[in-house]
Length: 93
Image (cartoon, rainbow, N blue to C red; front, side):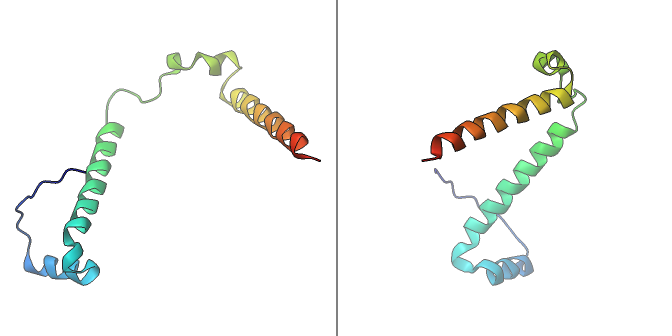
């Protein structure tokens, strides 16, 4: 991973707390991890706050064709059960 040095200013008490948790030698890794997590969280919040719905039924005609979501899930489970049984039968001596 490429890195870039960034000069940031933090309160002394916060730096002391971070050092107490992870040590001075791991400060950058800790801050990078926390920053990544926060960026991911904010992107998710922005995505969830959109006016456009995430789910569009037109993108999933297979669910309607199966008779609705409940029927679609039952069909998927039946298919998975059949596949599991085939694997079990093949594994038997």
